[in-house]
Length: 423
Ligand code: SF4
Image 1 (cartoon, protein in one colour):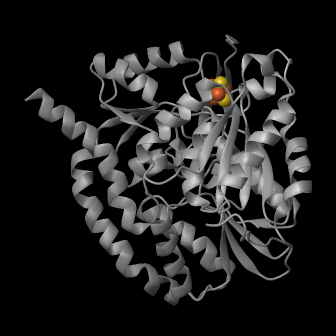
Image 2 (cartoon, protein in one colour; image 1 turned 180 degrees about the vertical axis):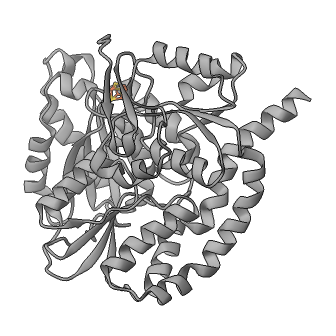
Image 3 (cartoon, protein in one colour; image 1 turned 60 degrees about the horizontal axis):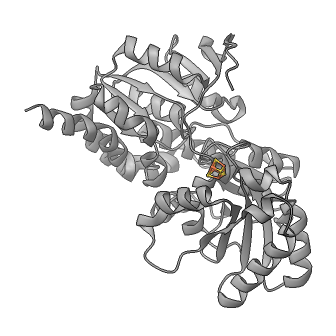
């Protein structure tokens, strides 16, 4: 794990990238199930993993479950791992029992983990086998959320990529928005698109796994999350075209994101301006009081959610924060090109992680605020740093005009808390 190679490269906008490989502190892709199971309301996510996987999911999602959950873990026991039991038979049995008990489930995702990968359990083949028995009532889909292959939000990318071959074909001109968004955000953005006169649009993932959007040569892709690069490339392979835009964070990001859609559908400039005028103005006014609190303070973003680059752009350009370092688990240039172009020249940008070195740089920079994963927050707080859990930016609705101030509040709150503690 301790490959110490560090390479300097040049990104667009002449931002040097520090590339690191070493010890990492990030969640695995199973974490994506926490929001995917809420999004896809007719789906169940069956993790084929160990007790560790089950504990991760329970602790990440347990507090949010109010009804019967739509995820679970088929625990691989010592007998499975030793190859004594036929794990395929066991998996089929668990899946069929689950579906008999839960007739509301129309899509079953088999989610791979580190243990299922290690024993080479072929989940795509298991999905094929189960589909032969269960279609058309239930569709079974496999993807990997293992920590060997994925980090945190990459679980969503893998899930969406697995859905792409199932999307029906279309030649209609349409906008396809790629990436999970909270329903409130989807509704607001849908309203704005309709006000501009864009009617033919869809979201991937949809709210129901049985209502998949179509794709084809006249589909225009507008990513709403920066971590779905593999799914986007699978959609491009089906003939779609990618619209280049920053992500809809803050007034600037949301305006540019909507403008990309408006331009692609030849919406008259005036109609576009009229549509966004009131919500953009409201958001600007709401952000002003956060700018007073955050401007001039330094921010260090450790790599975690893959949202770090768009967040850095928003926090710097709209709230005046200084960027001490922007870390990202991996740099997918196709997905963040427009964002990189908006970062100030000379922004310290790092890809991957060598934890000890990064913490050395953090201690040297002594930032006013550090965004990091849960595991690092407490130790850093104990050292006197003010931290923000990056996971909150994934679980909280933050996109769009009406959420701009909520996003700013997420970063202002830890500073206010520390100020109160210091009194
Ligand atoms: S998939 Fe791997 S990294 Fe994730 S909880 Fe299971 S064992 Fe741990």
